[in-house]
Image: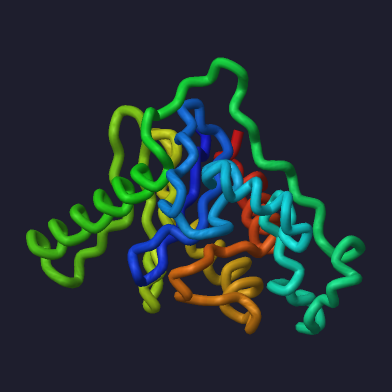
Length: 217
């Protein structure tokens, strides 16, 4: 059993975060202007990487020293202390040579995933009533898991079709790393419609949490 990818959508239906682990068919980079800045380096347009090289204040992993807080003290991490305090984060997994692609730019893929989630959720509410919740569905190729917050954020995870429900994992990501490094960080722009979650502490924490699961292999 494997975990393939994670998408986070805000209340404006925009993908603000993406991370993958066991994908064999990787998405193509998004078209210029198709996704927000700092959603994921692996799927951002090539022009964004060029801009990062011209702007030394933005790291290749979208680490933002102004968007991090010390988890133990709540003190804003100073600019000149970033190199010593940033956690060790695994590099974004690169696609193996010769690996296949989905044939879709990431911005189109993100829209399709969100569209499927909203369509199935609305269908379930109409057929089963408002008390019924859509939490996952399965195909022969993958299983989609959904956790939605009261504030409208949607955490979507794709996994092996034989995997049990991972809704509790999505909830752990929300009440743990998301609240700690995103919601409680006054320097992170929430619902800005201009920038994704470019917080290296959050990305590292999500990676450790997912890799520590018994279903991760």
